[in-house]
Image (tube, rainbow, N blue to C red; front, side):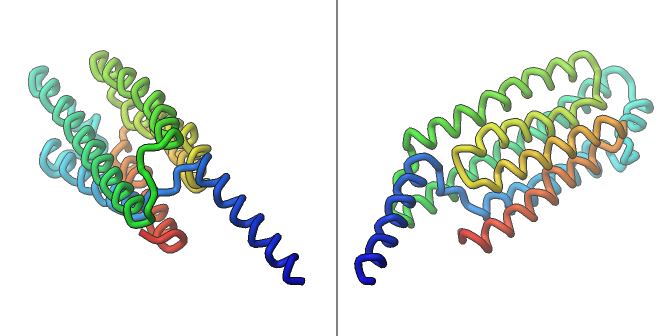
Length: 211
């Protein structure tokens, strides 16, 4: 009986070692919560400051602007989105570094490198494509592309970390595809996809895995 219990403990230890060698487990649930709050804040900045209390159908707001004003507003919206992304990524990195240190693990490992590469390839491709859409004035497709490419990045990186990341990516893709069929409601889908979904994910991850 004692030998059987020891064997079970050995199997659990081996399984844990294999999991840690193939998956990055230092992601913090708090980073998802922060990203969601930042996304909602970014949407509020866009609506109240950049669009100057314009219609939630942001394409209607552009119709009342001159050519130079439209150009300025477009790039301000892009800067707003980029700021949300940069701050969210920096906070996620800091929280993950803190969690790795608390658990006595190394943050920069072959697994974390593969995760980062698989995350950045779809994000980089999406960023270039979104700039092309912006330059060609296809504004209604920008938010759907943000959501879809971000979702693809999460799905791509999900195999190197917690399984919840994969499912979050699928939900982001579905939200982006739905947004593409409802022109003008980009801010609402942005709030849901990057805000609400991240907050729900962050709370769930925090409750299950801790900070």
